[in-house]
Image (cartoon, rainbow, N blue to C red; front, side):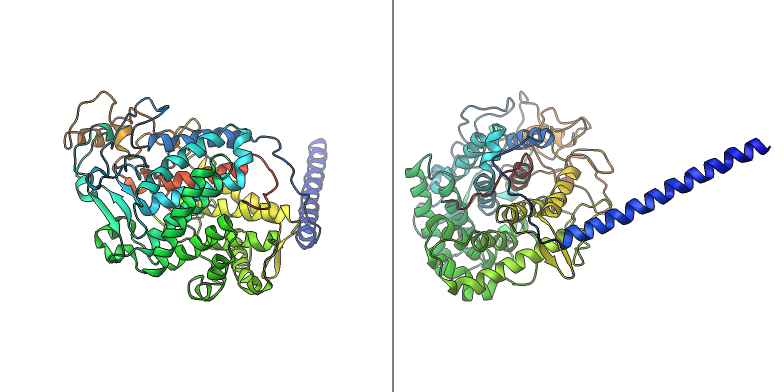
Length: 527
Protein backbone atom coordinates (compact mmCIF):
# COMPACT_ATOMS: atom_id res chain seq x y z
CA UNK A 1 0.00 0.00 0.00
CA UNK A 2 2.80 2.40 0.89
CA UNK A 3 4.52 1.64 -2.42
CA UNK A 4 1.28 2.30 -4.28
CA UNK A 5 0.85 5.68 -2.57
CA UNK A 6 4.42 6.61 -3.49
CA UNK A 7 3.71 5.93 -7.16
CA UNK A 8 0.51 7.99 -6.96
CA UNK A 9 2.42 10.85 -5.37
CA UNK A 10 5.02 10.87 -8.16
CA UNK A 11 2.28 10.73 -10.74
CA UNK A 12 0.49 13.62 -9.07
CA UNK A 13 3.65 15.74 -9.07
CA UNK A 14 4.25 14.89 -12.74
CA UNK A 15 0.71 15.92 -13.70
CA UNK A 16 1.07 19.13 -11.73
CA UNK A 17 4.33 19.94 -13.53
CA UNK A 18 2.74 19.25 -16.91
CA UNK A 19 -0.21 21.53 -16.09
CA UNK A 20 2.17 24.23 -14.87
CA UNK A 21 4.20 23.98 -18.07
CA UNK A 22 1.07 24.27 -20.18
CA UNK A 23 -0.11 27.32 -18.22
CA UNK A 24 3.31 29.00 -18.51
CA UNK A 25 3.42 28.15 -22.23
CA UNK A 26 -0.01 29.64 -22.78
CA UNK A 27 0.98 32.81 -20.93
CA UNK A 28 4.20 33.12 -22.92
CA UNK A 29 2.33 32.53 -26.18
CA UNK A 30 -0.27 35.12 -25.27
CA UNK A 31 2.38 37.68 -24.35
CA UNK A 32 4.32 36.94 -27.53
CA UNK A 33 1.19 37.30 -29.64
CA UNK A 34 0.36 40.58 -27.91
CA UNK A 35 3.88 41.86 -28.49
CA UNK A 36 3.83 40.74 -32.11
CA UNK A 37 0.46 42.37 -32.75
CA UNK A 38 1.70 45.65 -31.26
CA UNK A 39 5.04 45.55 -33.03
CA UNK A 40 5.74 48.12 -35.70
CA UNK A 41 8.28 45.84 -37.32
CA UNK A 42 7.17 44.82 -40.80
CA UNK A 43 7.44 41.28 -42.06
CA UNK A 44 10.00 40.60 -44.82
CA UNK A 45 8.98 41.42 -48.37
CA UNK A 46 8.34 38.21 -50.34
CA UNK A 47 10.56 37.63 -53.34
CA UNK A 48 9.72 35.74 -56.53
CA UNK A 49 7.41 32.73 -56.20
CA UNK A 50 8.76 30.44 -53.51
CA UNK A 51 8.06 26.88 -52.44
CA UNK A 52 4.84 25.41 -53.81
CA UNK A 53 2.10 24.30 -51.41
CA UNK A 54 1.06 21.11 -53.13
CA UNK A 55 -2.48 20.84 -51.81
CA UNK A 56 -3.33 24.30 -53.15
CA UNK A 57 -1.51 23.62 -56.43
CA UNK A 58 -3.50 20.42 -56.91
CA UNK A 59 -6.75 22.16 -55.99
CA UNK A 60 -6.01 25.02 -58.40
CA UNK A 61 -5.43 22.63 -61.29
CA UNK A 62 -8.73 20.99 -60.45
CA UNK A 63 -10.68 24.25 -60.09
CA UNK A 64 -9.42 25.61 -63.41
CA UNK A 65 -11.07 22.74 -65.29
CA UNK A 66 -14.63 23.86 -64.58
CA UNK A 67 -14.25 26.70 -67.06
CA UNK A 68 -13.70 24.01 -69.73
CA UNK A 69 -16.76 22.14 -68.48
CA UNK A 70 -18.87 25.28 -68.94
CA UNK A 71 -17.69 26.37 -72.39
CA UNK A 72 -20.22 26.95 -75.14
CA UNK A 73 -19.40 27.06 -78.83
CA UNK A 74 -17.00 25.23 -81.13
CA UNK A 75 -14.63 23.70 -78.63
CA UNK A 76 -10.91 23.97 -79.34
CA UNK A 77 -8.52 21.50 -77.72
CA UNK A 78 -11.44 20.13 -75.73
CA UNK A 79 -10.14 18.64 -72.48
CA UNK A 80 -13.49 17.36 -71.16
CA UNK A 81 -14.29 13.96 -72.66
CA UNK A 82 -18.05 14.21 -72.14
CA UNK A 83 -18.40 17.73 -73.56
CA UNK A 84 -18.79 18.70 -77.23
CA UNK A 85 -19.77 21.61 -79.43
CA UNK A 86 -22.96 23.44 -78.44
CA UNK A 87 -24.76 26.76 -78.81
CA UNK A 88 -23.26 27.21 -82.26
CA UNK A 89 -26.18 29.32 -83.51
CA UNK A 90 -26.42 31.55 -80.44
CA UNK A 91 -26.88 35.15 -81.58
CA UNK A 92 -27.63 34.26 -85.18
CA UNK A 93 -31.04 35.96 -85.16
CA UNK A 94 -29.21 39.27 -84.63
CA UNK A 95 -26.43 38.37 -87.08
CA UNK A 96 -24.03 38.02 -84.15
CA UNK A 97 -21.72 35.21 -83.12
CA UNK A 98 -22.56 34.64 -79.46
CA UNK A 99 -21.55 30.98 -79.56
CA UNK A 100 -18.70 31.37 -77.07
CA UNK A 101 -18.98 32.37 -73.44
CA UNK A 102 -19.76 30.13 -70.47
CA UNK A 103 -22.96 28.49 -69.34
CA UNK A 104 -23.87 30.06 -66.04
CA UNK A 105 -24.32 27.11 -63.72
CA UNK A 106 -26.02 23.73 -64.02
CA UNK A 107 -28.25 24.98 -66.84
CA UNK A 108 -27.62 26.29 -70.37
CA UNK A 109 -28.20 29.99 -69.80
CA UNK A 110 -25.72 32.71 -70.62
CA UNK A 111 -26.36 35.51 -68.14
CA UNK A 112 -24.16 38.49 -68.96
CA UNK A 113 -24.11 40.04 -65.48
CA UNK A 114 -22.48 37.16 -63.57
CA UNK A 115 -20.45 36.11 -66.63
CA UNK A 116 -18.83 39.54 -66.82
CA UNK A 117 -18.09 39.40 -63.08
CA UNK A 118 -16.46 36.02 -63.65
CA UNK A 119 -14.19 37.62 -66.25
CA UNK A 120 -13.31 40.57 -64.03
CA UNK A 121 -12.36 38.40 -61.06
CA UNK A 122 -10.41 35.97 -63.24
CA UNK A 123 -8.54 38.93 -64.75
CA UNK A 124 -7.78 40.28 -61.28
CA UNK A 125 -6.46 36.91 -60.16
CA UNK A 126 -4.17 36.73 -63.21
CA UNK A 127 -2.93 40.29 -62.72
CA UNK A 128 -2.14 39.79 -59.03
CA UNK A 129 -1.01 36.16 -59.10
CA UNK A 130 -0.07 35.34 -62.67
CA UNK A 131 3.49 34.53 -61.60
CA UNK A 132 2.15 32.09 -59.02
CA UNK A 133 -0.24 30.53 -61.54
CA UNK A 134 2.68 30.20 -63.93
CA UNK A 135 4.75 28.43 -61.29
CA UNK A 136 2.23 25.55 -61.35
CA UNK A 137 1.41 25.64 -65.06
CA UNK A 138 -1.99 27.31 -64.76
CA UNK A 139 -1.43 30.77 -66.22
CA UNK A 140 -2.06 29.79 -69.84
CA UNK A 141 -5.28 27.87 -69.04
CA UNK A 142 -6.51 30.88 -67.06
CA UNK A 143 -5.79 33.24 -69.94
CA UNK A 144 -7.46 30.89 -72.43
CA UNK A 145 -10.60 30.68 -70.31
CA UNK A 146 -10.68 34.44 -69.86
CA UNK A 147 -10.41 35.03 -73.61
CA UNK A 148 -13.27 32.59 -74.22
CA UNK A 149 -15.45 34.92 -72.15
CA UNK A 150 -14.14 38.22 -73.51
CA UNK A 151 -14.51 37.04 -77.12
CA UNK A 152 -18.19 36.57 -76.32
CA UNK A 153 -18.46 39.94 -74.55
CA UNK A 154 -16.88 41.78 -77.49
CA UNK A 155 -19.44 40.26 -79.85
CA UNK A 156 -22.25 41.00 -77.39
CA UNK A 157 -21.45 44.72 -77.72
CA UNK A 158 -22.12 45.43 -81.41
CA UNK A 159 -22.54 49.20 -81.01
CA UNK A 160 -21.72 51.82 -78.40
CA UNK A 161 -25.09 51.83 -76.64
CA UNK A 162 -26.24 48.25 -77.20
CA UNK A 163 -25.18 45.29 -75.07
CA UNK A 164 -26.68 41.81 -75.30
CA UNK A 165 -26.92 40.58 -71.74
CA UNK A 166 -28.64 37.19 -72.04
CA UNK A 167 -28.85 34.21 -74.36
CA UNK A 168 -31.71 31.79 -73.70
CA UNK A 169 -35.08 31.92 -72.01
CA UNK A 170 -34.63 30.76 -68.40
CA UNK A 171 -38.25 29.64 -68.06
CA UNK A 172 -38.07 27.44 -71.16
CA UNK A 173 -34.52 26.40 -70.36
CA UNK A 174 -35.42 25.19 -66.87
CA UNK A 175 -38.32 23.12 -68.22
CA UNK A 176 -35.75 20.90 -69.94
CA UNK A 177 -33.10 18.55 -68.57
CA UNK A 178 -30.80 17.83 -71.48
CA UNK A 179 -27.18 18.04 -72.53
CA UNK A 180 -26.04 21.34 -74.10
CA UNK A 181 -24.89 19.39 -77.16
CA UNK A 182 -28.44 18.20 -77.85
CA UNK A 183 -30.61 21.09 -76.65
CA UNK A 184 -33.33 22.20 -79.06
CA UNK A 185 -35.12 24.87 -77.03
CA UNK A 186 -35.26 28.43 -78.38
CA UNK A 187 -32.34 30.74 -77.57
CA UNK A 188 -33.80 34.28 -77.56
CA UNK A 189 -31.59 37.32 -76.91
CA UNK A 190 -32.02 40.13 -74.39
CA UNK A 191 -30.29 43.51 -74.68
CA UNK A 192 -29.90 46.78 -72.80
CA UNK A 193 -29.82 50.05 -74.75
CA UNK A 194 -30.60 53.74 -74.33
CA UNK A 195 -34.35 53.14 -73.99
CA UNK A 196 -33.85 50.11 -71.74
CA UNK A 197 -30.69 50.90 -69.78
CA UNK A 198 -28.73 48.62 -67.51
CA UNK A 199 -25.92 50.56 -65.86
CA UNK A 200 -25.02 47.67 -63.59
CA UNK A 201 -24.52 45.05 -66.31
CA UNK A 202 -22.93 47.53 -68.73
CA UNK A 203 -20.48 48.79 -66.09
CA UNK A 204 -19.61 45.26 -64.97
CA UNK A 205 -18.91 44.36 -68.60
CA UNK A 206 -16.75 47.50 -68.85
CA UNK A 207 -14.82 46.32 -65.78
CA UNK A 208 -14.35 42.91 -67.39
CA UNK A 209 -13.06 44.44 -70.63
CA UNK A 210 -10.75 46.92 -68.86
CA UNK A 211 -9.20 44.34 -66.54
CA UNK A 212 -8.79 41.82 -69.36
CA UNK A 213 -7.13 44.48 -71.52
CA UNK A 214 -4.35 44.55 -68.92
CA UNK A 215 -4.03 40.76 -68.96
CA UNK A 216 -3.46 40.71 -72.73
CA UNK A 217 -1.53 43.97 -72.99
CA UNK A 218 1.86 42.33 -73.58
CA UNK A 219 0.83 39.11 -75.30
CA UNK A 220 -1.69 40.61 -77.75
CA UNK A 221 -1.64 44.39 -77.85
CA UNK A 222 -4.22 44.61 -80.66
CA UNK A 223 -6.75 42.52 -78.75
CA UNK A 224 -5.98 44.49 -75.60
CA UNK A 225 -6.73 47.75 -77.41
CA UNK A 226 -10.00 46.34 -78.70
CA UNK A 227 -11.06 45.36 -75.20
CA UNK A 228 -10.15 48.78 -73.84
CA UNK A 229 -12.16 50.53 -76.56
CA UNK A 230 -15.24 48.48 -75.63
CA UNK A 231 -14.63 49.14 -71.93
CA UNK A 232 -14.59 52.90 -72.41
CA UNK A 233 -17.72 52.87 -74.56
CA UNK A 234 -19.60 50.65 -72.13
CA UNK A 235 -18.63 52.79 -69.15
CA UNK A 236 -19.87 55.93 -70.90
CA UNK A 237 -23.10 54.16 -71.82
CA UNK A 238 -23.57 52.91 -68.25
CA UNK A 239 -22.92 56.33 -66.75
CA UNK A 240 -24.93 58.48 -69.15
CA UNK A 241 -27.97 56.20 -69.43
CA UNK A 242 -28.54 55.14 -65.85
CA UNK A 243 -30.89 52.40 -64.79
CA UNK A 244 -31.02 49.06 -62.99
CA UNK A 245 -31.24 46.31 -65.60
CA UNK A 246 -33.45 44.01 -63.56
CA UNK A 247 -35.98 46.82 -63.06
CA UNK A 248 -36.09 47.55 -66.76
CA UNK A 249 -36.16 43.84 -67.64
CA UNK A 250 -38.17 42.38 -64.74
CA UNK A 251 -38.00 38.78 -65.94
CA UNK A 252 -34.26 38.59 -65.11
CA UNK A 253 -34.88 39.57 -61.50
CA UNK A 254 -35.80 35.97 -60.57
CA UNK A 255 -32.32 34.83 -61.45
CA UNK A 256 -29.84 37.71 -61.11
CA UNK A 257 -31.60 40.64 -59.54
CA UNK A 258 -29.40 43.70 -59.19
CA UNK A 259 -29.68 45.77 -56.02
CA UNK A 260 -28.14 48.85 -57.63
CA UNK A 261 -25.62 50.13 -60.15
CA UNK A 262 -23.49 52.52 -58.09
CA UNK A 263 -21.05 49.82 -57.05
CA UNK A 264 -20.54 48.69 -60.65
CA UNK A 265 -19.89 52.26 -61.81
CA UNK A 266 -17.17 52.68 -59.18
CA UNK A 267 -15.75 49.21 -59.89
CA UNK A 268 -15.56 49.93 -63.62
CA UNK A 269 -14.01 53.36 -63.04
CA UNK A 270 -11.36 51.79 -60.81
CA UNK A 271 -10.47 49.23 -63.45
CA UNK A 272 -10.42 51.83 -66.21
CA UNK A 273 -8.05 53.94 -64.13
CA UNK A 274 -5.67 50.99 -63.81
CA UNK A 275 -6.02 50.16 -67.50
CA UNK A 276 -5.54 53.70 -68.83
CA UNK A 277 -3.74 55.72 -66.17
CA UNK A 278 -6.33 58.42 -66.92
CA UNK A 279 -6.92 60.35 -63.72
CA UNK A 280 -10.45 61.28 -64.76
CA UNK A 281 -11.53 57.75 -63.85
CA UNK A 282 -9.89 58.09 -60.46
CA UNK A 283 -11.60 61.45 -59.99
CA UNK A 284 -14.89 59.77 -60.87
CA UNK A 285 -14.43 57.16 -58.12
CA UNK A 286 -13.01 59.45 -55.44
CA UNK A 287 -15.27 62.46 -56.03
CA UNK A 288 -19.01 62.82 -55.67
CA UNK A 289 -19.76 59.37 -57.08
CA UNK A 290 -17.68 57.86 -54.28
CA UNK A 291 -19.62 59.87 -51.72
CA UNK A 292 -22.90 58.76 -53.30
CA UNK A 293 -22.22 55.07 -53.78
CA UNK A 294 -19.13 53.76 -51.94
CA UNK A 295 -20.77 53.37 -48.50
CA UNK A 296 -17.56 54.45 -46.78
CA UNK A 297 -17.18 52.96 -43.31
CA UNK A 298 -19.75 50.25 -43.94
CA UNK A 299 -18.20 46.87 -44.85
CA UNK A 300 -20.09 44.79 -47.40
CA UNK A 301 -19.77 41.30 -48.91
CA UNK A 302 -18.05 40.89 -52.27
CA UNK A 303 -20.24 39.07 -54.80
CA UNK A 304 -21.63 39.14 -58.33
CA UNK A 305 -24.19 41.70 -57.13
CA UNK A 306 -22.05 43.91 -54.88
CA UNK A 307 -18.59 45.04 -55.98
CA UNK A 308 -17.92 47.59 -53.21
CA UNK A 309 -15.51 45.53 -51.11
CA UNK A 310 -13.59 44.60 -54.24
CA UNK A 311 -13.46 48.24 -55.32
CA UNK A 312 -12.22 49.32 -51.92
CA UNK A 313 -9.38 46.81 -52.02
CA UNK A 314 -8.56 47.59 -55.66
CA UNK A 315 -8.33 51.33 -54.98
CA UNK A 316 -6.32 50.66 -51.81
CA UNK A 317 -3.66 49.40 -54.20
CA UNK A 318 -3.29 53.00 -55.47
CA UNK A 319 -2.56 54.40 -52.02
CA UNK A 320 -0.34 51.45 -51.06
CA UNK A 321 1.85 51.83 -54.14
CA UNK A 322 1.50 55.62 -54.54
CA UNK A 323 1.25 56.03 -58.28
CA UNK A 324 3.70 58.57 -59.70
CA UNK A 325 2.32 61.96 -60.63
CA UNK A 326 -0.85 61.44 -58.65
CA UNK A 327 -2.33 64.66 -57.36
CA UNK A 328 -2.81 64.99 -53.61
CA UNK A 329 -6.37 66.04 -54.34
CA UNK A 330 -7.30 62.35 -54.55
CA UNK A 331 -5.83 61.65 -51.13
CA UNK A 332 -8.92 61.91 -48.94
CA UNK A 333 -11.05 59.88 -51.34
CA UNK A 334 -8.43 57.14 -51.61
CA UNK A 335 -8.04 57.10 -47.84
CA UNK A 336 -11.79 56.56 -47.49
CA UNK A 337 -11.53 53.52 -49.75
CA UNK A 338 -8.53 52.17 -47.84
CA UNK A 339 -10.11 52.74 -44.43
CA UNK A 340 -13.23 50.93 -45.56
CA UNK A 341 -11.13 48.10 -47.00
CA UNK A 342 -9.47 47.80 -43.60
CA UNK A 343 -12.90 47.68 -41.98
CA UNK A 344 -13.74 44.80 -44.34
CA UNK A 345 -10.55 43.01 -43.26
CA UNK A 346 -11.25 43.61 -39.57
CA UNK A 347 -14.70 42.11 -40.00
CA UNK A 348 -13.21 38.94 -41.46
CA UNK A 349 -10.53 38.28 -38.84
CA UNK A 350 -12.06 35.98 -36.20
CA UNK A 351 -10.11 37.53 -33.29
CA UNK A 352 -10.90 41.11 -34.26
CA UNK A 353 -13.09 43.20 -31.90
CA UNK A 354 -15.25 43.96 -34.96
CA UNK A 355 -15.35 40.39 -36.31
CA UNK A 356 -18.56 39.48 -38.07
CA UNK A 357 -20.74 36.90 -36.39
CA UNK A 358 -21.79 35.64 -39.82
CA UNK A 359 -19.89 32.37 -39.67
CA UNK A 360 -20.49 28.72 -38.84
CA UNK A 361 -19.42 27.06 -35.63
CA UNK A 362 -16.38 25.71 -37.47
CA UNK A 363 -15.24 29.08 -38.75
CA UNK A 364 -16.60 29.39 -42.29
CA UNK A 365 -17.94 32.83 -43.20
CA UNK A 366 -21.62 32.20 -43.87
CA UNK A 367 -24.01 34.80 -45.29
CA UNK A 368 -26.60 33.11 -47.46
CA UNK A 369 -28.33 29.72 -47.75
CA UNK A 370 -28.13 29.92 -51.53
CA UNK A 371 -24.58 29.41 -52.77
CA UNK A 372 -23.15 29.87 -49.30
CA UNK A 373 -19.52 29.45 -50.41
CA UNK A 374 -19.43 32.54 -52.61
CA UNK A 375 -18.91 35.04 -49.79
CA UNK A 376 -16.28 33.16 -47.74
CA UNK A 377 -14.18 32.34 -50.78
CA UNK A 378 -14.49 35.84 -52.23
CA UNK A 379 -13.69 37.35 -48.81
CA UNK A 380 -10.63 35.14 -48.44
CA UNK A 381 -9.45 36.18 -51.91
CA UNK A 382 -9.67 39.85 -50.92
CA UNK A 383 -7.87 39.11 -47.64
CA UNK A 384 -4.85 37.57 -49.36
CA UNK A 385 -4.65 40.45 -51.82
CA UNK A 386 -4.72 42.98 -49.00
CA UNK A 387 -2.20 40.95 -47.03
CA UNK A 388 0.16 40.95 -50.00
CA UNK A 389 -0.21 44.71 -50.47
CA UNK A 390 0.80 45.10 -46.83
CA UNK A 391 3.77 42.75 -47.10
CA UNK A 392 5.12 44.28 -50.29
CA UNK A 393 4.89 47.83 -48.95
CA UNK A 394 6.27 46.90 -45.51
CA UNK A 395 3.01 47.82 -43.78
CA UNK A 396 3.28 45.95 -40.47
CA UNK A 397 -0.31 45.93 -39.28
CA UNK A 398 -3.86 47.18 -39.51
CA UNK A 399 -5.80 48.55 -36.55
CA UNK A 400 -9.13 47.00 -35.61
CA UNK A 401 -10.37 49.17 -32.76
CA UNK A 402 -7.96 48.51 -29.88
CA UNK A 403 -6.20 45.53 -31.51
CA UNK A 404 -3.69 45.21 -34.32
CA UNK A 405 -3.34 42.48 -36.91
CA UNK A 406 -0.58 41.52 -39.31
CA UNK A 407 -0.52 40.36 -42.93
CA UNK A 408 -0.02 36.81 -41.67
CA UNK A 409 -3.28 37.07 -39.70
CA UNK A 410 -5.11 37.88 -42.93
CA UNK A 411 -3.39 35.05 -44.76
CA UNK A 412 -4.22 32.61 -41.97
CA UNK A 413 -7.88 33.61 -42.24
CA UNK A 414 -7.79 33.02 -45.99
CA UNK A 415 -6.17 29.62 -45.50
CA UNK A 416 -8.86 28.67 -42.99
CA UNK A 417 -11.59 29.34 -45.54
CA UNK A 418 -9.74 27.50 -48.32
CA UNK A 419 -9.02 24.54 -46.04
CA UNK A 420 -12.67 24.31 -45.01
CA UNK A 421 -13.67 24.19 -48.69
CA UNK A 422 -11.06 21.51 -49.41
CA UNK A 423 -12.14 19.17 -46.62
CA UNK A 424 -11.17 20.53 -43.21
CA UNK A 425 -14.78 20.59 -42.07
CA UNK A 426 -17.09 18.40 -39.96
CA UNK A 427 -18.06 16.34 -43.01
CA UNK A 428 -14.42 15.76 -44.02
CA UNK A 429 -15.61 16.45 -47.56
CA UNK A 430 -14.23 18.67 -50.29
CA UNK A 431 -16.76 21.05 -51.81
CA UNK A 432 -14.49 21.29 -54.87
CA UNK A 433 -15.62 18.50 -57.18
CA UNK A 434 -12.77 16.22 -58.19
CA UNK A 435 -10.47 17.25 -55.36
CA UNK A 436 -9.73 14.83 -52.52
CA UNK A 437 -11.18 11.42 -51.75
CA UNK A 438 -14.67 12.65 -50.88
CA UNK A 439 -16.62 15.27 -52.81
CA UNK A 440 -20.25 15.74 -53.97
CA UNK A 441 -21.45 12.98 -56.30
CA UNK A 442 -24.89 14.40 -57.17
CA UNK A 443 -23.94 17.82 -58.51
CA UNK A 444 -26.92 19.75 -59.90
CA UNK A 445 -25.54 19.93 -63.43
CA UNK A 446 -27.26 18.63 -66.57
CA UNK A 447 -24.23 17.67 -68.60
CA UNK A 448 -22.62 15.87 -65.68
CA UNK A 449 -25.80 13.98 -64.82
CA UNK A 450 -26.57 12.58 -68.30
CA UNK A 451 -24.39 9.91 -69.94
CA UNK A 452 -22.55 11.33 -72.94
CA UNK A 453 -24.01 8.67 -75.24
CA UNK A 454 -27.61 9.08 -74.04
CA UNK A 455 -30.21 10.15 -76.60
CA UNK A 456 -32.60 12.41 -74.76
CA UNK A 457 -34.92 15.24 -75.61
CA UNK A 458 -36.09 18.13 -73.47
CA UNK A 459 -38.33 16.15 -71.11
CA UNK A 460 -37.10 12.56 -70.99
CA UNK A 461 -33.78 13.72 -69.59
CA UNK A 462 -35.46 14.35 -66.23
CA UNK A 463 -35.00 10.64 -65.49
CA UNK A 464 -31.35 11.52 -64.86
CA UNK A 465 -32.20 14.42 -62.55
CA UNK A 466 -34.25 12.02 -60.42
CA UNK A 467 -31.90 9.05 -60.70
CA UNK A 468 -30.62 7.56 -57.41
CA UNK A 469 -27.24 6.96 -59.05
CA UNK A 470 -24.27 9.35 -58.82
CA UNK A 471 -23.50 11.53 -61.82
CA UNK A 472 -21.91 9.49 -64.63
CA UNK A 473 -19.64 12.44 -65.49
CA UNK A 474 -17.53 14.35 -63.00
CA UNK A 475 -17.95 18.12 -63.25
CA UNK A 476 -14.29 18.53 -62.37
CA UNK A 477 -13.47 21.80 -60.67
CA UNK A 478 -17.05 22.73 -59.82
CA UNK A 479 -17.36 24.62 -56.55
CA UNK A 480 -20.83 23.68 -55.35
CA UNK A 481 -23.15 25.97 -53.41
CA UNK A 482 -21.92 24.80 -50.02
CA UNK A 483 -23.03 23.98 -46.48
CA UNK A 484 -25.85 25.24 -44.34
CA UNK A 485 -25.16 27.38 -41.25
CA UNK A 486 -24.96 24.23 -39.10
CA UNK A 487 -22.14 22.87 -41.33
CA UNK A 488 -24.39 20.23 -42.92
CA UNK A 489 -24.74 19.39 -46.61
CA UNK A 490 -27.29 17.30 -48.48
CA UNK A 491 -25.76 15.75 -51.59
CA UNK A 492 -28.78 15.61 -53.90
CA UNK A 493 -29.30 16.76 -57.49
CA UNK A 494 -32.64 18.25 -56.52
CA UNK A 495 -30.97 20.32 -53.83
CA UNK A 496 -29.78 23.06 -56.17
CA UNK A 497 -29.37 25.44 -53.22
CA UNK A 498 -26.36 23.42 -52.09
CA UNK A 499 -25.20 21.29 -55.01
CA UNK A 500 -25.36 23.63 -58.01
CA UNK A 501 -22.01 25.10 -59.09
CA UNK A 502 -21.49 28.40 -60.91
CA UNK A 503 -18.79 29.97 -63.03
CA UNK A 504 -18.41 32.97 -60.72
CA UNK A 505 -17.73 30.56 -57.85
CA UNK A 506 -14.98 29.16 -60.02
CA UNK A 507 -13.48 32.62 -60.53
CA UNK A 508 -13.21 33.37 -56.82
CA UNK A 509 -11.85 29.92 -55.87
CA UNK A 510 -9.26 30.15 -58.65
CA UNK A 511 -8.27 33.56 -57.33
CA UNK A 512 -8.01 32.32 -53.76
CA UNK A 513 -6.04 29.18 -54.59
CA UNK A 514 -3.71 31.14 -56.88
CA UNK A 515 -2.92 33.46 -53.98
CA UNK A 516 -2.13 30.55 -51.64
CA UNK A 517 -0.23 28.22 -53.97
CA UNK A 518 3.01 30.03 -53.04
CA UNK A 519 4.15 33.53 -52.06
CA UNK A 520 5.47 36.41 -54.12
CA UNK A 521 5.65 40.20 -54.03
CA UNK A 522 2.65 42.11 -55.28
CA UNK A 523 3.25 43.84 -58.61
CA UNK A 524 3.70 47.58 -58.28
CA UNK A 525 1.50 48.36 -61.28
CA UNK A 526 -0.73 46.36 -63.60
CA UNK A 527 0.24 48.39 -66.66
